[in-house]
Length: 166
Image 1 (cartoon, rainbow, N blue to C red):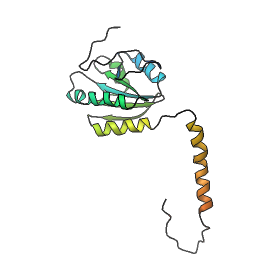
Image 2: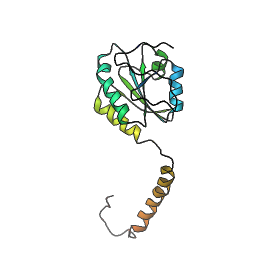
Image 3: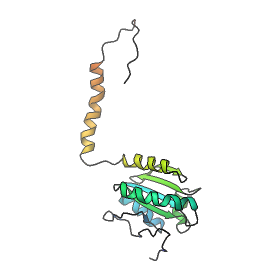
């Protein structure tokens, strides 16, 4: 498969669980994009074009975030070369960033706003479930409401009380 190099020369590799690059992975086909979604729990997608000025501005920031958040698989989709994926993602303007958790879209942002991109990436990173932590978190979440009910004093309907702030 021949892929033209881009301005920032991103690594072009096939998505699989053993692949970890320090740069976003460019996907050339919709099938390859679907494989990335199925193989990785968290995926951040940058829909870009070579001629798009704002895309060229935010591209290096997206690459820095790939290094800062190794638990997220970062993907670049050139909308001119991979129109099928761009259409499936309903890209209306560029740059468009789309975020997936376990193959399902959980967010998106349009434009070259570094603050919005960082916020979306942080939200996506918070979704990761580490084996063992989920089992520990569930009993703690169930115990919290029970503890709050036990700590609350009995209420008398005829007495006005200030609201309890939590």
